[in-house]
Image (cartoon, rainbow, N blue to C red; front, side, top):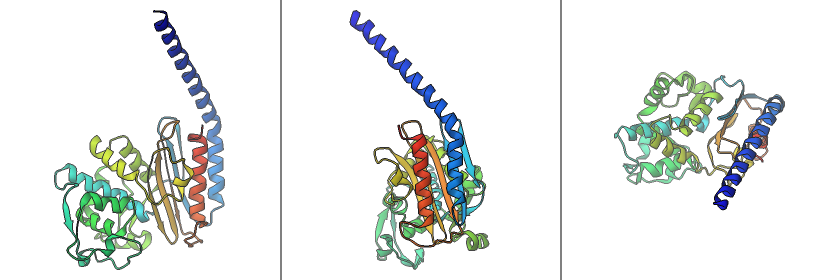
Length: 302
């Protein structure tokens, strides 16, 4: 009996201590809001080009943006809407993760090979949709992505889904009838830092499709090969869902971090960069790393 009373007392002490620590953290965060904004503004103001930033902590009353509604190039961030539309078809029983598709070079019609594994396929080679999705998200394979865009129903089908689900500014431009002028300006796709973050948040909350399929989408986004920038500033023992994008004058990354103090999402997109290099010290890559490091300091680091 005494042991039971003692255990209950310990539980109460732990609960009180936890509540006290949470109050301390919330007070500290309130004080730090101005610091976070000031430091992000400082980083952005030093950048030679256009920048769009959006940050949201899912549990705390913190939301912040700089040009967060400005249209920007997606580069490979557009692969998230493609991923969603594929799972939308799977949910409707129009497709399966185990569906086997056959490669034909002429049907993809994409000349640039780069490091894409799918570009090495020979006509007649087969692959499952599930593995093709892994090539698109984990390795950011463009051949796989264009193939999946076609399987999803094309840019028009993906854009219709985005429109119906109240994503007003995120659109596929490439190989999409009526969006030729947008393609000239923004490339493969266009979006805003806020909408791209909102996509990840809805996926995390199980609201992008039904919960089981939202979870499958989320799992794909936690298996990323390209981890040198924003991901490099977050300890590897914490899960992160993310996608990266890069073209010569634009670098971008969107993340949702499962941090010890609660989940937070952020997106950084640059455009019209003066620095078009592809080395580690590219100004866009440096900006993304610095913002990620800053946010982890306030939202993640104990």
